[in-house]
Structure formats: structure tokens, C-alpha cells
Length: 461
Image (tube, rainbow, N blue to C red; front, top):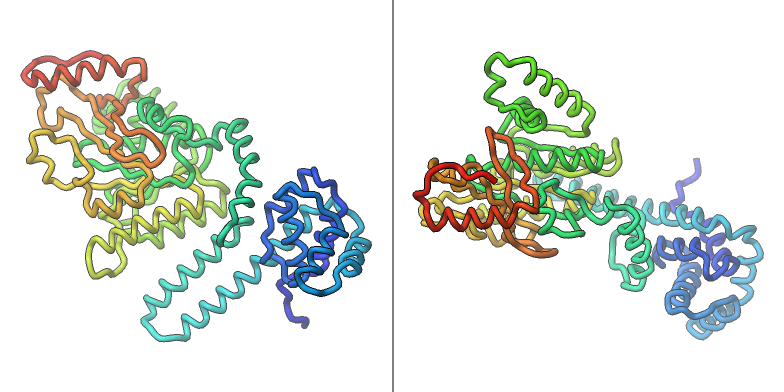
């Protein structure tokens, strides 16, 4: 049996020959050059030719056999004209240049994977506890997964990124989903702007109990599932699958969940039946295991991505219920989780929404609107999160508040844009969107309520 070879010299030579045969303005040439780096080639002489051609192309300079051979001869002191000329003559067609590029990239990734697997063997046969070894190997496998994506991993020169940028820009303009995902909450989407929720973002939703952080997550999850038609995964360590389902059913049917514990009329049952039929067609998946670890969540997300392709979003309810790795201090354990989730968002190209419980100390303040320091282990969370949304509803503390179910979604941190406050209305456990056109009126009502907490009656917006 022949030894497996993690390289394909025929593909390498065919691509080198194609570089000189294809039109210099061809989109296929630009695509092949963007796909590959010099290190993807197995043979050093192929690396040298490719590097010189790519440098010429990116600088806008013309190149041909004579120019490249002359430059290489000056660099190495070796003869190159005949060597490259022979490769060009043996290349039948340049039309398959992207096919050759994919083969070269795949073989390059196979070599990198074999190296990581060898590292894994060294880990498993080395010193340390089995738990530590498994943790290290999991990290190595994550690296393999990252490197398995064409064009990812390692240092990338800015000129290579520039080569791809126009394609990215065109995709944003012609494909609205590529620009970012909408939450379905008008005020939040206004604050997040055209960029929306990025596919590598981690968004933290922080609140005290009863403020509606789970309901906000469910509302956003339903919107993302509907608009993207991609899998949305909810990891719920606080509520069971059935409880999460009932929250979603109430939101979708606009029937209060209180009615699920008593006989309902035909109209309500009709609304519920329609809502269930709609939910059954969605791509929402719920996992209610307790004490889920970062490794478990990451593994489930990987499996879902491998089975279904791109993911819509991941929701985790909530941070302090996650099983943390052993650490000397609690803040280091939390840091490992948030950093790992942010890396997962980047690796899988999926937004991650992380729910977090706020410190109860805020309830001793006159103004109970949460601020950044109310987050446990604030520094690390703020460092890893792209956005931090905090929820406040006056009626949780003052049942006679004229603001009723008016709920503030306070964007305290936004790495990609503005901070500010969006509003929703909570009625019978259902989160109702407030249209952007009503924001001025709502702001005026909040100001008026702050000035006169004793005012009676509910305001109508």
C-alpha cells in the first residue's frame, strides 16, 4: 500500500502554468490568488513562483515568463526560464485554475491537520491528568476546524484582504443578509444601523429577574429564524424545553401563557393552532440540559453547522449557570467562558446571544437602571462582548407606575456603533414592538413619569 501523500504536484504545476496562460484581468485569476497563500504550496520552487506572481498582480504590474524568471534568477542565482517554461507548456488549459487552487488548498489543510493530529498524540502520551489532556486536544481540534476553512487561519497580508473586499462589499449590497441580521426590535435595529448584528458578534443581554431577558431572547430568536430561515439554537439552563416552548407559543399566538392553565375559547385555540403550525416550520432548536459546558455547546453547534450549513444564531440562558472550567478565581472562570463563546462566534460565523444575571446591588440605588458595573466580572464581559443590552422596567419596582409594561432596552456598549435606549411593551408576558415613529412620544412619557412618580393610571402609546 502506497504511503498517503498530503500534496498534489500535478495541481501545483497546473496552477503555476495557468498563471501565465490566463488573462491578467480574469476574475478567475483574482479568485485563485485570493484563495491561496504561498505556504499552501508543497514545493519550495512553486512557492517562489507563486509569491512573485501574486506580488506583481497585487501591485498592478504586468508579469510574464521573462519578467518572473528574471526576478527569480536575481533573487536565487538559479536558472528559472526553462523550468517555468516547461511547466507552462505542460499545462493544457487555464480554465480550471480555480479547481487547481481548491486542490492545493485542501492538500495544504490536510498537511496542517496531520501536524495537529501528531500534536494530539504527543499530548495524550505526555504528562498531565486525563481531563487536562482532553481539554488540550479539544483546543487542537478547534484549531483544525478553523484551519479547514478555505482562506482562514494564520497571518494574512492586508493586500490579500483587499483582494477580497470588493466581493464582500458587492455581497452586502446585493444580499441584505450579508450585511447583518436584524433583531426584529425596531429601536435596537435603529441603534445597530445598517450593519445589524454581525455574524461573528457576541451580544450580552443583562437584567435582574422578571425584567424579561428570556422573553427578549425568544423574541429576537423567532425574528432571526423567520428572516434567515437558518437554524437558531437556544441553550436553556434555567427553563425546560416545554417552558421555553410555551413562552414562544404565547409570543407567536399573542395568547397569554396564563391561559394555558385553564379552558380556552375557540378563537384562542385557533390562534394557538396557527402559531404552532408556523413554529413547526421554523428552524428553532432547544436544549435544556443543566450545567452545560462551553465544550458541550460548541460541540452541539458544530454538529448543527455540519448537518445544516450556516447557523442563524445561538442563544445561551444564562452565563452563571454554565459549567465552568477549574480556575483559581471566579472571574477567570467567567473569562474563559466569554472568551470561548466569542471565539465560537468567530469560528462558526454565527452571532451568539449570552444572557447574564445582574448584581442585586443595583436595587439599593434610587435609579435602578442597570449600568456596566452591575454585570458580574464586568471587565472581561465588556472586553469580549460586541454589544451589551440591559433591560429595565419601572413597573417591576413600582406596580403603580404609569408606564405600565414599558420596557427599556438600554444599549450600554456597542463596539460597532451608537449606544442608546430602545423600547418595547410587555403585556401579559408578551413583548410587543414599539414602532420607531412612536419613540418621541415614549421618551416624553418616560420623562414625565420620572418627574411625577405619583401620577396614576396607565399611559397609552
